[in-house]
Image (cartoon, rainbow over all chains, first blue to last red; front, side, top):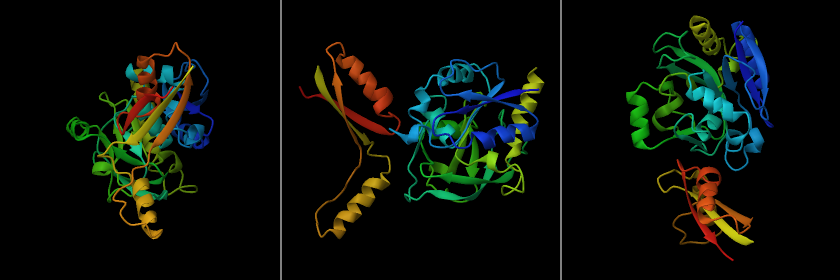
Length: 224
Length: 78
C-alpha cells in the first residue's frame, strides 16, 4: 500500500483530516513531525493546513525552515509528489518549492465558506479529474491572496501550471483568481482551499476533494 | 556586540490592506493630511562581531523578509 506522509508542525490543525483523506483514498498515512530529519520512506507528502508556529513572522515562514522541510524540498525537487494545502501552500512558497506568495485577503476578512474551483491542469494530484472539471471544497483562510510578479504569472499560465482557479471572483483577491499552482513537473502542488475537508458528504460539502488523493495514489502505483 | 535594525515593508506594488485600514482610521481621529500608510515590521538584533554585513543581508533577505512581497533595510545603530 502506498505510504503518504502527513506533516505535523506545532500549530498544524488539519493533519488529522489529511490523514483521513489518504485512508479514504486507499493509502496508508504516515505521520511526520516537524523535527524529523527524514521522510520515513514515504511515497508522497502532504503539508496540511493550520497555523504552524502561530503564523509568527509570516504565515509558513518558520515552518519552511524547520528540519523536516529540508528533505521535503530535496525530494520535491527530485520528483516526489508533494501537496501543500492552505498553510501548507504558504509553507511550500516560503520554502521556494513553488513561486509567488500568499498575503492577507484584500478585504482583511477571514474567508470561511465553500468555493467552486476549476481544475485546469493535469498533475500528479489532479489526474483523476476531467480537464476543466468544476469541484466544490471549503476555503478557510485570512492570508490566501496569491500574488506573484507579472512575469511569473504569465509563465505559470503559459506552462499550464495554474492547477485550480476560483470559478467566481477570488474571495481573497488572489491575482488572476488563482487558487492553486504546481511546479514545472506537475508533481508539487499547492492550493488554498481544503480538499481534505470534502471527502465525505456527512462531514463536508461532498466528495470532490477525494480526487486529489486518489490521483496521487494511482500515480504512485503506476510508477511502481 | 552591535545593535542592528532591520525594517521590512511590503513592496510598493503589493496591496497593503492593513496600511489602508490604518489610514482610514486616522481620518476618524480628526487628523487630516495623512495621504498613505504602509505597515511593516521592525526587528532589533543584538549581534556579536563575527556577524558581518553579508551575514546580516542573508538573515534579512532569506528569513526576516520575503523578497517576493517585501523590501528591507539593514542598519547598524551602534
